[in-house]
Length: 543
Image (cartoon, one colour):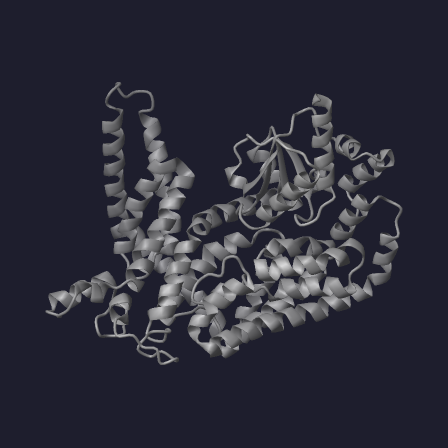
């Protein structure tokens, strides 16, 4: 059992850096997805064209909807500033009818949640508080939802707080710590909020305008599908978070606040390309890849764990072209027919996509479904051609005399490597524990705490942890804790860390003293049996 080949480590520096940046961006967004969904549902139900809105396509208008949307009897979402203006001009009625929920949530709640999360990531609770204060200045100094501002000002404010505290670290007289800490954070927060209001906010308005203009330009020239040339390969290489959460989500929220939906939420989250790829492997693949693809398709399509199809694409790199074509076909469908989602679909499950699309009416839902189907069909057809063209060579490879573990790993990977060579050399002994030691991984450390780590720490790692827990249960081995978390949250306490191959370098850097195991497929890897056998041998030796 090994981790990464020297060549992969040497060439992965830039990719690892981009992955780390993408993880930081997703770390701001992912913990707050529930709030985005809540806002999306409120918008879906109560905007003028929502289920209970004044222009409801179902005729379900509810008179109290105006107080939820905001704007009194008007259908416009005025927000807090509009409400104050309306009251100043002598408008009658409850102030809550003007404020509502939709406007304040997207203007204040969501950006402040992002800022607080970002601040905590940089400097704990103290950084989160200052980041929230500073971002409030950015929000009030602009007239659009400041998601990008929160994602930039939040970390900066927390970093400045951290640097400030170092100035008098260890120099405060006993008994004055709380006084100095509270006043310093309060004063710094005030200064940063003022800077955000007068300087940072206008700059972010310009940045948002440029990014929004770029998207509008792509749409006006019918070039938006070309974004798939970047997005689909980025997904396979675990670089998608920097694009999705750094650009698509903030811009998509702004579009959804204005029009009720956004096509940007479906560029990366569309489950169609991954489904098409896995179905092609189901029908035209060979060996373990063919056997595991149907289960992977169910998990990817209904569970929304897109990472599960990445090993299949990496085993046949030319299939990335099929993913690009399928993604572009899906984007084209939504662009031409006006499909979009009301809020981010996270995870990218067809269930989440349905929930986010249904607010646009039956027509929008059908368009979104059509985009998924077309993306899947295009990817399936192209991948099928690729797999059929190399089927003879793949069958010959499957006829190799290595053990089942080596055959399955090579089938998923599509080529040999240093890891496969190590397993091949040790397979003659016939012992899984020997395979572990023969691959150069230390086995003298008692294994009690196993952590599955992935980019966000939610989807694929949770699935892998569940699979391994079941294997320990069937083996009747107790005393082993198997959990999942984000790579960025590894603290070195894990005895053994399991990651997908492309992410192992980052996990090593985060938890250098742990044993590290790389797998190509979290759903079904022969390495799990080796880990179980290694722990069993440790328990037997203790008896």
